[in-house]
Image (cartoon, rainbow, N blue to C red; front, top):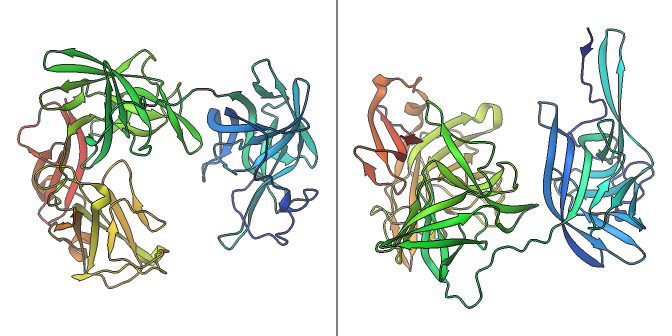
Length: 528
């Protein structure tokens, strides 16, 4: 029986400074050879790749049919320029090929990326990579990945303009390599297909009245503004995806008395996000015995429609089936979303004034000794004390350390200017905001912290209101042992607007558990 041992050999994700940053791998010439722009006829395309990728410390993983938004430029003299290849390595540059009849030949290697902005050099090139297996004296199968010094890849072109790389397989990859040492970095394609993409994103007709700031989509303890327009039995929503505020989604309306059913079809192309084409999809939600929420890997059949019940008197819409989630997805075949809308509800709200609810779920993580900083995290609901949504652009928070208001130093936190009030949506290397919740986390580089405090600050139409200052005693918090029932002071349930629910029935709720030590935990849960 054979034993197997994977040896990446030359493959590595680590990047070190190059001895001569003006050069790349032998034979590649200067970094000025990288193609950043090209002139000619531009064709929007989808690039579908399968192959191998290095995933952290887990080694090589196989990826299948990753689809990426890209484009091809057809220049003079039969030159063809292909923008990006890998969804995992967005070089924002082109590789060049030459068309000859129904083939496009790309000579390799080609330099595709160079960056020294962080004080060290990252530089990559593309070439073909041979995968060679051998058996050592102890019976282990060793696998090595050997970049070719000079190669070419041929793309066949069919009558529809679809380009397919020839000759690639599990033994020969189109690979990305380190330009310093010429070695493979652990990313290679065994399949590349480039096809034209001619879908047009959904748009509301130009002659429709758009009701701005009229509907608000409900998230977990915060909401965001959604624009609305209607054209007979057709309605349009702009901004259902928090990450794509300008994207439109089209739906159909069937009225029945004082209510109506709003049906959103799947597979609507709504635009591009980053390097992906985004489509509407639907998936079924499941939960485990701890209340953790999961989405099924396979989307619902393409003819399934996501439905909202529209109360025409109250001007509210909410999901008809609480177990179905509307996704903004990067694939038509599998669940891979950039946004999910669970238990979606749309409400009419014309005024956004109010006093912000208190922050909650304060936690402290002391990693000062190992990492040189500590972490303070908390939930910052963008909901007023009356249950109304607050405008995220007008909401900020203030941190207090040992009862003194904290100033975030520009140099220490890589900011343009120092600041005391942090915008709700602000995020950089040291501020981390999870976009599927109102959870915030901040790093601090000082010792001797006894208490953390956080306060919401809301400034709407020139009127400032503030929440209470919620404070965490670090010593008491760090003294908390594993949670058990004896330490629980109270358990309360809240709906997704922040209103307390005495006897929650079926639906999605926030379960807040308060402990005798003053700490609070929050968990999204489904009650059936």
